[in-house]
Amino acid sequence: MDKDDKDLHVDDEFKQSFNDGYTLAKELGMNTNSLKDISAGNQRMIAMRKGMEEFQKEIVMKKEKDKILKDMGLRDKYLSTKPPQKDKDKGLDLEI
Image 1 (cartoon, rainbow, N blue to C red):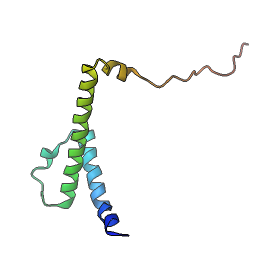
Image 2: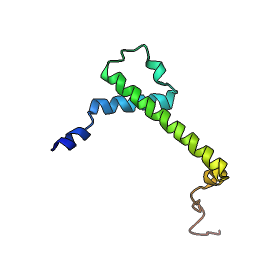
Image 3: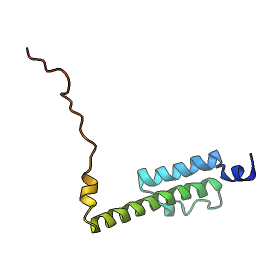
């Protein structure tokens, strides 16, 4: 393992805390202000905040994408594209 590989390693505890923060933001609508009174220097809290921030960034990017598509007149077309439905009746045609 060289220096670059070591720099890319993410601590498992950090990863779990990051994912917990992301989930809290997604499922409960929490944001970093929700944790402002909790020990800011704690590595777990830092990772949770980063997870919450990541979720918020993704929401902003999705809203911007939707706005651009709407401005281009493509939003409804983009949202209405659904995978083709499989024909449930496909197969044997039995008459009794």
